[in-house]
Length: 308
Ligand code: PPE
Image (cartoon, rainbow, N blue to C red; front, side, top):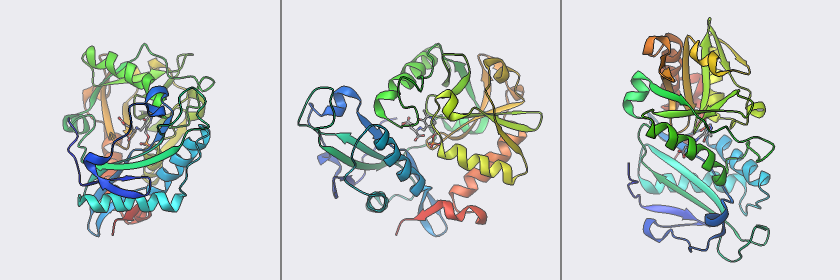
């Protein structure tokens, strides 16, 4: 789906018109993938538009920058304000928010240290990442032949642009083969994550998810929310190293991510999961999640930051 422009993009401290938010073709990050970013969502609530877990996303953005030795010229509060201002200027009651910290035009070469660190925040409407049908009925997942990046080759805890080449390769392979999404495993064959989502499975009433640090998966903020929701619903959630066969034998499985939200997996490598229909645990968690992001669940109200 092509991006629909919104009014303003925040660039280095000011809101500029959408079409003026441009960079030079010799921008450092365009050549070497030396940038970090976030994906955040704002939702309509009874009290107005609100951003979901904004502080946690901004904190992760700064942590990603730290891992890449990028010195961000703004603090957490300024970045929070930048996001709220950009969402406010858009007039949208629901949107996807993309903060980006990158190295600008000025120097070339692999040493990023002399480059100017620049920051942008854009917002636009982004519907169901894996399709409305995927959210309702589940998606077809394919285990990728591309292994997830090894944490010894790149800091996988960073949400860094260059690292998404790994996800893109896996995504292209899966889409061309007729699947909705790819699942990457570690070089040792343990289940890591989707191209832009964390993975959970349900087995004998227990919920299992791979340990992010061990498998090189991003520590998802949606995953963290889902873990809390699942525990509050009375489910046991445990981290476990999982094999491909654990996916085939799961009672239920689902993906989580800001863009994707909570999406049931209907099959893995053409083997039906939960008979190919969203299972009861997945559906229960999905329902609370969609309520929480819209401010309909009192105990999770603190997860929302109002746009004024
Ligand atoms: N793993 C990866 C590799 C990943 O990119 C994401 C988010 C997650 C897990 C889930 O993290 P969280 O959003 O904090 O729950 N992927 C973002 C980018 C997607 C894109 O296509 O761009 C997102 O969901 O915004």
